Each structure stands twice: as structure tokens, then as C-alpha cells.
Image (cartoon, rainbow, N blue to C red; front, side, top):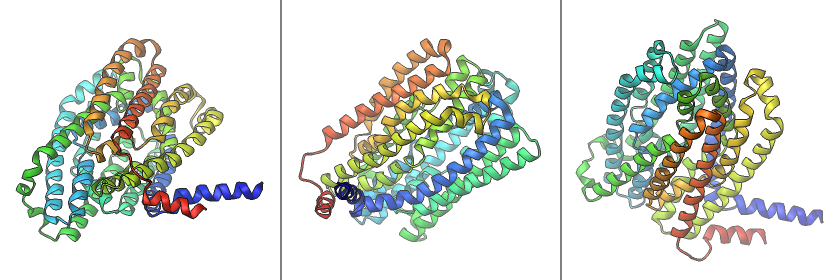
Length: 461
């Protein structure tokens, strides 16, 4: 019986890892996961110090300022990393280097313009953000100060996409670690010198800026290596036949990202409008702990999307389906274990690492974990639709969910506060992901098992 159990476990291991697709996906994810693991530890320590320095209300204000900048930046963003992965990947597969370079050039120029627009909006809206979100107009300078991160990220999205499509995940991982190490070091100095909000914001700003500039440097070096020193002279007119498709893809991803701001990425701002910085502090801590659950899953979309794009370009639907299935098995298993662990140990963790005054964050954490269990298991729901050339479906789903969620926010958050916001977030993830997963499987052609799946099956016999 023990031998039979061993054989089953060995068979499961082979099914997961004994094929080229999954090995490459896991290898590339390992670079990012190692960086994410180290970064998560550094970030957790930094978060603990910031929370202890600033208290619940100050910790909430910190979250408001950082999310304010993030929301405006995403609003102006066209998610150029996704466009670069899809189209540079396609032209690389067909060995059309001129068009591949032209796509990256067009993406970088577009993102540069969007970043300038984003910082202009931050500068103009900072007084309103300070007045209505933090309830303190004197904090306007802090909003504009942290907003400088947008300029450091001038072409960081396009650069990240280029590094991903050419499997340069080690450089991305290194920059992620550098960002969190620098942020932690500056936070420790602020803690020792009894600094405050300004010092913490500067720590955040410098860490993120160095990471963004480093990724940009590596991407430009990769472009030169691939296409030569004069790659940036690649004529944009080479893309004229695809101009409409490229524009449609970029606009669709921008609209989808903007709608996601309502559904998923502006939680702290909604709570701050209707409640207080104290409740924002509880909610920010709950979101930070949810990141522990997302830690090994968050790199998977970055590594899975290039693989799906390649299989899509080759019309290899069996391998496409196989990647989705094995990815869900890995991500879902981990998320379930972590959810149970936080259910049992979450209160003790919050009380010990932070302070007992942060314990009201625990119920929000439990509520959100329901939605994140679904979202992590099917982490590929959106990138699969992008690879299949169907970005509009995510846009339509996000639009409907945004309308429903805004109604829910106005009805429930003023009365029930951050717990209602947590429930709406969990519901948005569960419904949106489920609909996208259904759509992906309706789009996939029926066919014989993939070569990777057949190889894994034969190996286990």
C-alpha cells in the first residue's frame, strides 16, 4: 500500500515537471519566485517597521498616498508589457526582426507619453487627493513627492515585457530584490533615527525608482543585443498593416486596466472616502498579508503568458490547454494550504508581528482569502484571453463588475466599512475569474492531447 502511494506521488511529480513546457515555466518562475520570496520577507519586515512607526492611522495614510499614485498611473497606462509580449513574440517566431523592434519602439514611445500624462494628473489632483482621501490638505506635498515614481517608470512596462519574451527573468528578479532591499535599508534608518512619514515615502520612492531604471537599462541592452545598435531607427511604418490591430489591443487593455481600478486596485481609496484612515490601516494590513498567499503565484502570469503566446502562434492547442491545467494544479494547491494556515494562525501573526491594535484586520483577511483562492487557482484567466486575441471579453466583464461594485460600495461601505469592501473585492474576483475561465475553454478548439501531456503520461507508466 505504501508502495502504491509512492507510485502515485511519483506519477504526480512526473506529470507536473517531466516535460519541457512545465520545466521551462517552473525554471523561469523560479527566478521570479526566489526574488519574490526574498522580496516578500524584506517587504514584510519593512511593513512591520512602518506600521509600528506610524500607527494604524499613519499606516493607512501611507497606503492612501501610494495607491493614489498607482491608480492614476494605471489609469493612463496601456499595459505595454502585454502588447510587447504578444507582438514582439509573434514577429520573433516568424523571424521578422524589423517589425519586432518597431513594436518595442512604438510601445516605449506610447508608454513614455502616458507616463508624462500620468504625472501631470498626479500633480493636478494631489490637492484633492489630500483633502478627500486623507482628510488633511497639508499632505499635498507628499502626494506629489511620491508621484515622481511615475517618471522613473517612464518605459518600465515595455522593458519588462521585452525581458519576459526573451526569458530574461533573472534580471527582473534581481531588480525586485534590489528594490525591496533598498526600501528596507532606508526604512530601518528611518526607524533608528525616529523618522516619520516623509522618510518612509522616500524609502518607497527610491527603492521603486532604482528597480524601474534597472529594468529599463537591461531591456535596452537586450534590444541592442537582439536587433543591433540602430534598432531604435526601425520604421514605425513597418507596422502600418497591423496598426489598427495594435491600437485596438492597446486601447482594450487600457480600458480593462481602468475598470480593474474600480474592481480590484483602488480599495484603500474607497474606504478612505467613506470611512477613516484608521479603517484604511486595518485594510492595508489585510491586503499586505494576502500578498503572502499571492507570493509564489504572482510570478506565474509573467512566465506563463510568453509560453501561451508561443503555443498560440504555433496553433498547438493541446500544449496550450496543458499549461493551463498544470498551472492551476500548482497554484491552487499552494493557495489552499496557505489559506488554511492563515485561518489558524492569522490572529497570532498579526498580534505578534504588528501590534494587538491591528487585530481588526483579521476578519477582512479571511473574507478576501475566499476570492483569492479562486483568483490564484485560475491565475491565467486574463493572459489566456490575451494570448487568444480576445482582450475585449475581460473588458466587458470588468465593466459589468465595476458597475455592480460601485453600487455596492455606495450602499455598503458607508455602513459596514472595510469589511464590506473586502467582501466586494472577494466577490469581484470570484465572479470575474469564473466568467473568464469559462470563456477561455469555449474558445479552445477540441483536439488530441498535447505532446507534453502524452510524454508525461508515458513517463508515469
